[in-house]
Amino acid sequence: MANKKVRVRFAPSPTGDLHVGNIRTALFDWAYARHTGGTFIFRIEDTDTTRVTDEYIAAAIDTLRWLGLQWDEGPKVGGDYGPYLQSQRMDVYAHWAQKFLDQKDAYYCYCTPAELEARRDAQRAANVAPGYDGQCRNLTAAQIAGYKDEGRLPVIRMRMPDGETTFVDQIRGEMSFDHKFVPDFVLVRGDGSPLYTLAVAVDDILMKVTHILRGEDLLSSTPRQIRVYQAMGVALEDYPTFAHLPFVMGQDNTKLSKRNGEVSIAWYREAGYLPEAICNYLALLGWSPGEDRENITMQELTELFTVERVNSSPARFDMKKLEAINGDKIRALTLDDFLERSLPFLKTARVITGSDEEIALVKSALPIIQERITRLNEIPAMLKFLFVKGFAVEADSVAKVSDAASKDVLKRALADLTPLTGWTHTSIESVLRASLIEELGLKPRVAFGSIRIAVTGSTVSPPLFESMELLGKNACLERISAALAL
Image (cartoon, rainbow, N blue to C red; front, side, top):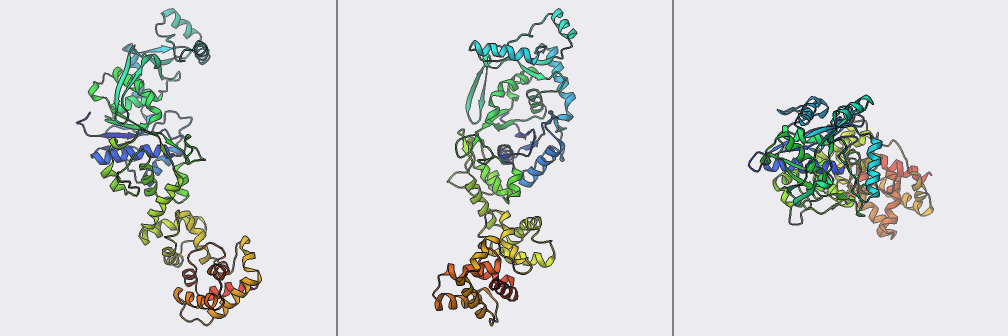
C-alpha cells in the first residue's frame, strides 16, 4: 500500500474514559494522517454491549474534540465507509463469518468453557503451551447432531494453517510468528456476536485502512488478523502496514496505574491541564522531534511526525515533565485566551457567578498569576480573595496574624497606608518597604507575611502589592483592621 493515500484509524473500545495510552495512540494516528495528507478515521468498537455504553462513547467523542484531534471519517462526521460504530455493522460480520464457514476456513466449535479449561490444565501439566487443540476441527455429522441435541451453542473458529506468519512492522522490523503458538481462534461467540479479531480485521479491509498504528500489547494478535485478510481473499499488497507503538510505563518501570500517571484524560482536563500540553507531552512518549526539543505546537507535530522516528523502547510517563510543559503552555496564552480557559474553573469553584464586573476583575488579575501557576485549577485558590466579602483568614493561618510581632507589623502598615493617595502597587510597595524594611529593619518574609494573610486570607497568593492594588484601598485597610481585631 506504499503508493496509496494513507488511511489510518483510531478504534477504541470505550469501557470507561479514555486514558493516556488510548490518547497517545490517537495522537500518533492523527499526526501521521496530517503529516502525509491522509485520512484519520475514528471508529468505535462497541460490540461488547455489556461494557461499552452510550455515555462512554459520547465521552470519547468529546475528549477527542477537546484535544483537537478532529477526525475525517467517523461518528458525527460520517464518511463513505460507515457506519463507524461496530454495533451497527453486525450484518457485515455475519456475512463474512458465514463466508469463512462456506470456504472451510472456519468451523463450528462445540467445546464448553469447562472442557476447554480442563484441556488447558492438561496442557500445562504436560508442559505444553496452552491453546485450542483442534478438538472440533473435523467433527462427523453424528458428533455435530449429538452436540446439537445437548443444546450446545457453538462458536465459530478460524483454522490456522501450518507454518508461520511473517510481516514487516514499521517500528520493529520483520516479525515472525510460528503457528504452533497461534491456535485456531474464535471469530463469533455462541450468541452470534463477533469477537474483536473478526470485526477489526474485516473493518480495516472494508474501510481501506492502509496503516495501523496501535499499542504493542496488540502485536501478538497480528497473525490472527492477517489470517482473516487471507480468508477474505485480500491480495498481499493490499494488507495494511502495521506499526506497534512502545508501551508507556510509570516512573518505577511498572505498567501505568493511577499511582504513577495512568488516569483518564478527563481527570487531567478537570485538573487544569491544557489539551495542547497533553498532546505535546504524549507526543514525546516514544517519539522525538529531534534536537532535544520538548515544547512543540500541534502544527509542528504534524510537520515533523514520521513513524520512522518512533522508538521501539518503552516510554516513561513523568507527571513533573507534563506539569512543566503545561506551565509553559499557560504562559504562552494570550490574555483573552487565558481568560476564556480560566472562567470555567472559577465558576465551578463558585468563586464568581460570571457577571461582567467579575470577569473584568479576573482579567485584570490574570497577568499577575500567569507566570506562577502550572495548572488552571490553581486559579480559584489564587484569586478567591478578590471576591470574598469582608475579612476571612484560613484557619491554619490565624495564629500567624495573632501574635504580638504580627500585630505590630499590621499596626504600622495600617498607619502608613491610610494616608496614601495614589493606590498603585508601586506606591504601596514603596511605603511598606520604607517603614517595615528600612526603618524597622524587618526581613521581607516577616514584614510582608502577616500583611499577605490579612489581605488575602492565605499564606499563598499572587504578588502582594499587585494583589492589594486590585483589591482596592478600602478593602485592604478594612481587612488589616479586622486582622488586628482578632
